Length: 261
Ligand code: T3D
Image 1: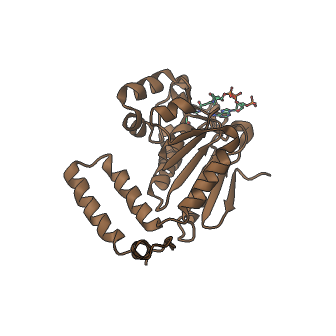
Image 2: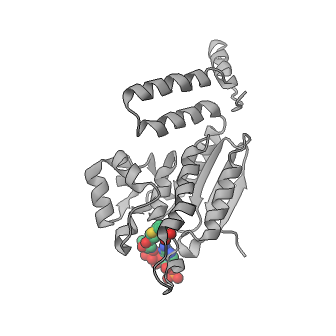
Image 3: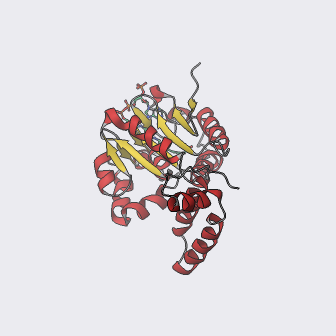
């Protein structure tokens, strides 16, 4: 049987491909468990960037609704959010290295919000983002009600979520929801080049930057300034900071190790 997640190790980075293409890579428990294990493995220092994408014509259609069609009374969806979707978003945001997302096709429901939780999102020009929850009587989850208003403002977030209309990749870029819409044919080359580049960068500094950005959504200025001070102190003690300064002074390219010490 095909694995629901394909894990490919590259030189310093890992590519994770959601692999249930006949279901537009909708999540079942097996895929959740495989992705959780792969993200935990990616915490290893040898992995310095992660690329997340989907197999086939879709990125991810959120929860597999085939698993929800049983007539055995109402399911406890709060339990699956608690067990799977919330930990997934926390894993992505908490991973101490950049997570690039290559949205190769439609991203719907939790599939869209998982993409928005990633650090840098590229999307194929043909891809669409759909807050599909309203179509089936659910509430946007996987951090959608947190990320969207912050990324696109309240008016756009509300309309996207209450209407569940598809948003094109180009509009998502122009609204600031994603980093870039790129030609379908070049998406994976661009995404892989980006992940490979990030894997050569000062990983600890990037991790601390990610921590600062994660915290800024809920901090006031004073708290954020204090946090920047503390994180900068930490960054200043890393081997990559020493290497970056030496390389600058010696007028040569830096060779970052990504190591903590
Ligand atoms: O339940 C909990 O634990 C709570 C958590 C919820 C998180 C959520 O994500 S809720 C939202 C769930 N997702 C959706 O509501 C999206 C459902 N899918 C769609 O609306 C459409 O498929 C798309 C707009 C994404 C794409 O449309 P289209 O026309 O390009 O493709 P299609 O023909 O609808 O889908 C292709 C196949 O994928 C089709 O199977 P078939 O007919 O070829 O055998 C379709 O049934 C299957 N598929 C698509 N999405 C899902 C799915 N199968 C299971 N679950 C899906 N979510």
